[in-house]
Length: 607
Ligand SMILES: Nc1nc2c(ncn2[C@@H]2O[C@H](COP(=O)(O)OP(=O)(O)O)[C@@H](O)[C@H]2O)c(=O)[nH]1
Ligand SMILES: [Mg+2]
Image (cartoon, rainbow, N blue to C red; front, side):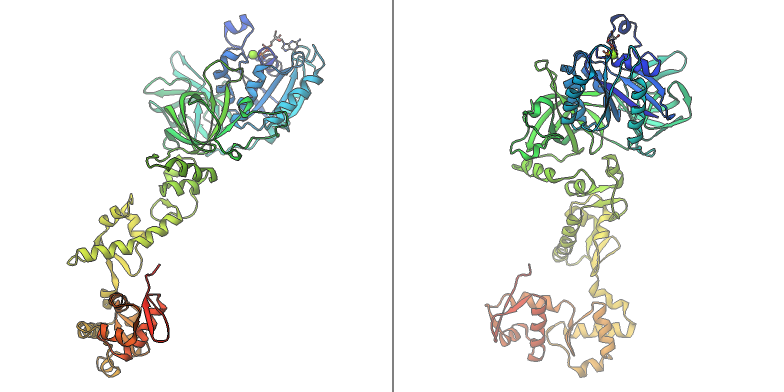
């Protein structure tokens, strides 16, 4: 089925048209019928010529009931905009249009009704021009009379074409039903109604309300009991809940939404607030193009679905603002809040749409943090990547609750990260391990938990995923493998390597002669294996040193007056010319030293 909301000025014939199309009475209340005025949302449905079922949410047009109008239009995917042929464009036409623009409604049609009272031509031209400015330029226009029935068949056909173009919602999407009506049915308890935009609700489901869990005892769709229903649909749900649900609350899939009262948003001014000059371009306005942010009063009302919350607006730079809501709402990235001035001074009180860019924004404590944050968000497409840039590490479930599908592989468990952040951590870890080893020479390595805290990580498993050769995790500590790797060599070779390392301990830069290596049973093959496992370092053919000798050499050379000659280096390291020349060339290759001229070198600080 499909759901379409009405919109338009009071008395332009919205309810009459819904009645004519469906044969049902959208004005249910006795008071509404007596006064001929829609006060509450009305619900009526019909089958279109194609057989598709279509439910209308009929909204009040009177300015006093704007909040109710927003509750009806908010969750509906499309709108039937009604303008009376005999009155043309009126203040609430303008206000309703501003609301549709703010909410980003892009599907709809224009019904110019009361066409039996006046030529629909002028009103059609006038209304179409306004709709185009608000991003609804392409909609079909139909002239119709709710009184005589003239044009109704054309309208039904146009509605069929409209619903055929609507995107099909995902039946597995998380559920969020903004409650627009609550009533008690004798003997069966509380029933709530609302528009289900996507996802599926079934009997027995456990959903969440702000007050706690709510079990679905029965599902009705267009007055028929059904075992389950997928969006888009109008639903009536019989609930068993710990506290009575209220209109304006949302009934949601547990864990699938972020309950939040602080959000960072991109503001799009609409209607008169967006300063439409005669020459203003059609389509959505780009506030980002202006240097200053949009000027909004600091305290507004934010509407989403049937909810309305007090909202403090803090501009943080350009079109980006931080909203503080009077109560937590279940939100996703990309949700659009409508911002309205609760005062009654202006004819049109809808000021802006606010697209959620981050439902869990970080605190802005440092000086200049707001500006940096605004710059970061001004570029951001609302997606997982942009969230990870800010939050650095998020679990898959957090990303889903924030409204994104996690992309790519998690780095560990269900943790996703920003690639640049992960690289920074990878670079930092060996330094932290080295410092720990220097400060705790008798311990075998840095405890994983200490590393977790040093790197500011939320989970120890993340440390383990950062560890790679030559580091390894052993017994809850991060150890450097090179020394112990000799254990991976055949026992005879390992023993020979150990013996060699012991011999070299006193004068580590005096590489053994070929004869001594042969005596120890370390032929070219054995040496190669020991180099592979990281136990030995080969700086040139036949020149073998203990692993790490090159870093140690660079350290000692850095203490010499710079630049230095080969012989100065040889003396400083207590080495020989045979070793020193290839060792310095090796250091050049590693970027630890560089030649100044034919005779001298100096140390470099690796960048
Ligand atoms: N002549 C004529 N009157 C209409 C038509 N549609 C609505 N009306 C009348 O206009 C008044 C307001 O209609 P209603 O449907 O309540 O308007 P709403 O406030 O937009 O829902 C009522 O008196 C209707 O009878 C129409 O197509 N032709
Ligand atoms: Mg009405």
